[in-house]
Image (cartoon, rainbow, N blue to C red; front, top):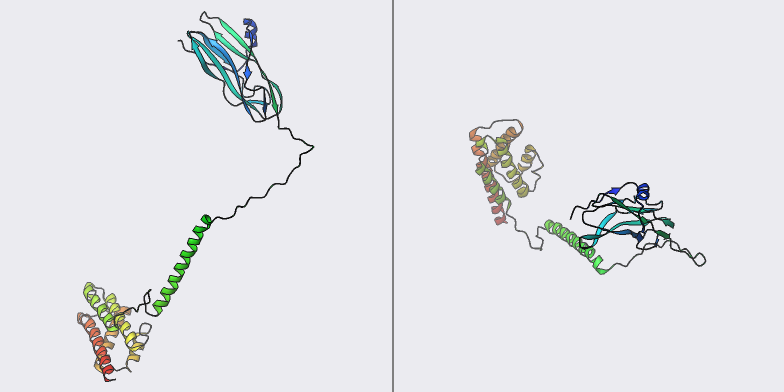
Length: 314
C-alpha cells in the first residue's frame, strides 16, 4: 500500500469545501457534558482506499475560547478490509470555564488516485461544561481543621530509648574509668601493678642507649632523655618536684638527702653538662657523652640500694 501522509494544517479551507461541494458529516465527543477540569475525546471517522492520501485540518490549541486541546490530533487505524482502511482522528480536550461551547468544523481532504480532491466537512458537536452545584440554602461553611496529631507508638520511641541507654552507659563508663584511674585500678576495680621507679628509669636509659643519639650528632635530644629519666626517678624516690624545677633547685633539695658526696658531685656534673648542651649550644666531649648514662645508672642503683638498706634497718 502506498504511503499515507498526515499533514496538520494551520487553517480551515471553507473555500475549498464550497468548491468541491463536500458532504457535511458530524464529529463526536465521548461525552456531551463534563465538569470543569474533566477530559473528553473529540473524534471523527473516515475510510481511505489504497493509493489515496489524507490531510486533516488542525483544531488548534484553543478550538474555541474556553476549551483547550491537551494533545495533537492523531490518527488510529480501526480496521482494514480489502485494502480499505477505517481511520479515526482524535484529540483530547478539557475546559476550566463553565458554559456552553460549539466546537468548530473539521475538514478532511482526501487525495484520490485520479488526482482529484474530496473534502469531508465534519460539523462540530455541542459541549456543556458545568460546575459542582452548591446548595446555598443548607450549605454551612466550616473553619480549617488543625493538624491531626497521632499518638506516638512504641516502635517510634524505641530508637530514642536505645540512644538514651547508650549515652547513660558511656557516661557511667567514663566516670568509673576516671575514679579507678585515680585509685590506680583498672576499669574492673583490680589494682594496676606498676613497675618501681628505678626499673622505669633504668628501662628508659637503656632505650636511650640503644638509640645512639649522641653518636648521630643529636646531643640535645640525648641529654634531654637522660635527664628526664633521672628527674622522674628523683621525683618519685624523694618526693620533690624535680620535673618542674630547674637543675639548681632540684640539686639544692637533693643536697639534704642521704646521698654520698661523690655521687652527688657526679650527678651535679651530669646536669651541668646537660644544661650547657640544651641551653647554651655546648658541644660535649665524647668522654662526657660516654659517661652520661653510666653516671645516671650508678646514681639510680646506689640510691635504690640505700633505700633498701634503710628499710631493712627499720
